[in-house]
Structure formats: C-alpha cells, structure tokens
Amino acid sequence: MIVKFKQPLLLGAVVAGLTLSIMGSGFKTSLSNIDQPWLAKVNGHYITEQDYKLSKEKLAGKLPEEQILSLMIDNALLIQRAQELGLIDSDRVVKKAIVHSTVEKLVHKAIAQDPSDATLKGFYQKNKNLFTHPDKFKIRMANHQTGNDALCQQDELVDDQGKVNQQWFDQEIQHPANQGFISQVLLHRHFGPSIAEHITRLQKGQLSKSFMSEGSCLSFILADRQSSQLANFENIKTKVLGEYRSQKRRKTLSDLLDQLKQNSDIQLATLVKEHTREENTDEI
Amino acid sequence: MKSNRLVVFSLVALIASGGFSLLEFVAQKKYATNVNSDVAAVINGNEIKKVNYLTAVAMIEEDKRGEINRADYQLVIDRLMEEELLFQYALEGDILFEANITQLVISNMLSNIVSHITSDDYSDEQIKTFYDMQIENNPAFKQAMAGQGFSGIKDDLAIAMFEIEKSKAIRDYLSILNKKASISFANDNPVVANTQLLRESL
Image (cartoon, rainbow over all chains, first blue to last red; front, side, top):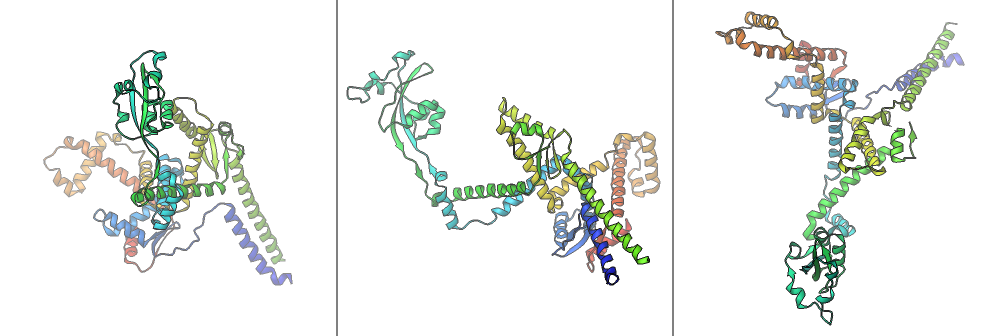
C-alpha cells in the first residue's frame, strides 16, 4: 500500500519543501497575470502597450521611435536596482514625492465624480453651521477724552430716563469699526475680547458701559444688528461643492490611514512613548 | 532499499527547508524587535529614524518659540508614521513607474553611477591624447578643428571627455544589469522586434 503511494508522497513532499523555502525567504513572486497587452517584461515588471504609447507621446521628437522601448527597459532596470540598493527608502525627496503622488491620486479618484444635486443639498442641510453667516453688528462709538479711570463713568452720558444724552453724541468719533456691519471676529480684532463680548450682548440702541483703553474712555452704542442667517443654497452652490470635496478628501485619506494603521505592526521607541505617554503599542 | 533511501533523503530535505524557513522567520522577527537606539519607531519592519523625529520636533519648537507639549509630540510621530504607512502602501502598486517618480529615482541613480567621475581628473596630457585620437579617427572633428590650436579648446575637450566617460559608465552599468535581468518580449510586434535587435547590438 505504502509502495503504491510512495511516488505521489515524494512529489508532494518535494513541492511542499520548495514552497516553504520560497515563502520563508520572503521572495516576492509576480504571479499575477496582466490583463492588458504588454510589450516587455523586465524582472516581473510589465511594460504595457499603454505605457509605451504614453512614453512615445512624451518623447516625440526627442528620441528615435525604435529606442523608446529600449529606454523604458533601461529605466525599469535602474528603478529595480535603486529599490534593491534601498535608495528609494532612504531618499527623503523621493519618499515625499511618492507619498504626495499617492495622496493626490487617491483624493483625485475620490472626488472625480461630482455629487448629484440631491446629495449636495443633503450635505448643505447637514452642515448648516458651515454656511451660516454669523451675527453682524453696527456700532457707534464715543471717546470721552479723560485720562482718569475714575472719571470714565457712564452716569453723565445718560439722562434721567436712561437715554443717551447729547454729550455722548458730541463726543462721537469715527473709527474703521463703525463704518458698517462687522462680525464679532472683527470687533475682537479692533477692541479686544472683553469689549467685543460686551457689545455682542447689547440690545439694539443700548449704550455699553465705558472702557478705559490706552488713556481714552470709550463707550459704544449698538446701532443695529444682523442676525445670523443660513445662506441660500443656490447662491452658494459652488462653495458647498468646495466644502463637500474638501471633507470627502479628508475622509478618504483618514479612512485609508485608519485601515493601514489597523493592519500594521507599529512599535514606538521608549523616548517617543515618554513624549506621548502612549500606552497601547509595544515598546521597543 | 534504494527507494527507502530516496524517501529518507526527501524527508530530510523537507525538514531542512522547513527549518530554514523557520529560522528565517525568527531572524526577521528578531530584527523587528531588536532595533538600534537611533530609531523612533518601526512600522512593519521599516524604521523611522530618531534624527528625523527630533528634527521635526525641533521645527515645531522653533515655530512655537516655546516648550512643546504632549499633543505636539503626538502630532510629529503621527505625521511620520502616516508618511511611512502611505509610502509602504504606495510601493504595493506601480508608483515607481509613474513618470514623475521614475524621473526622480533615475536621476538619483544616474548621479550615483557617475559620482566617482569628476571633470578635474584630466591632465593636459590625457586631454591631448584624446584630442590627437579624435583628429586621427574623427573626420568631422578634424574638419571642425581646422585652424584652431589645442590650447584654445582644451577646456571644452575636458568637458566632452567628462560627458563621454559618464555616458560610458552608465552604459557599462546598464549592461551589467541587463545581463543579470530576466527580460522577455511579447511576440509578433514590430516595436518589440526592433527593440530586440537594438538591444542585441548593444
């Protein structure tokens, strides 16, 4: 019985041994078949008719036609050699170019097709905050010309009914900030956080408290306020599309990175672990 | 008796190859965990050098003009790891054969191949020998040089010698790669036929 199966067993043993050796050595085989017409195969790398056509277009007039494929073969040999020597891994410029090109290709593919109007509108509805104009404020301001902190008081600027008196209007000044409606961000930039915050809480027509600022006593009246409003979809369609693409680009990249991280063996040096207090990866 | 010996021999071969594979696996694993102190992280066996990590940290420190915190360190290592992951992912495809990348890699390779050749290496005597040889063997050169003395074109000749030497070094290098390579061609294609003829003549 054993004698009968000896030959197939032997053959199986030899095949298994060879397979194990090849796998163990980390040798990369190019077993995948190419699904397009090719002209040459250089150490497993196919030069396709399409590659050749592109090179021919690019090199038209620069190189005799019969030398183009030969040049492509030489290039393939040089690239494979560079890889063997580790020149690609060690060259920061090449590495960065490879990463840049990969990211560009990836995001280009992700946003190649424009979303339908319905999808875009859905995105707009879901991200209303991104397309809402913030509150805007129109202010008037007066400088009461006093260097004395104690005299910078509001009492003398309002009459018995609490309305702003003539004295305030006599001291009204012009300033870039009171030329029209401005946002809270701009108020912040002109007058600092506490004044900006205070103005945004005023009612229309209300006088602010007085603030000492660089030797001046300033007070403000909120002349008008434009409440935040959602921009009309049709008017900002291009902006919505831009935001949609931008978010899709970020998501595509972060999804890929998450997937790559999950499937990777990542080890951090002790120094990096100390810096980041990382607990979840193996220590080197 | 003979076939028994064959069985034993095959089994020994099988055990040996299995053992060899196991050893290789263990060696690779060991390499992955026993790394040098100049490494900040190892991503699927590829190292991120500590110097690159610390340089990026220093750049952030300079930008902030102050001490950096845990989040900054995390940002640095995250970016470096992501770059390495994307690089590894890219290499799984045919990115090296994309025009812009090919250009960069080949230009670096060619610079490496000719890095030992410098134009300052030629003595007057060598240039004169080159000049005499060209005059003797190259009618076009002889014609172009008519009425011109050697000293007037010495520098240009040195540059020409430099270019010829570089070109020869590249050809020699490619010839070695070509001999070691496994190159096959598709049948029945005129482009291929011409290329094969051309490469055989080199």
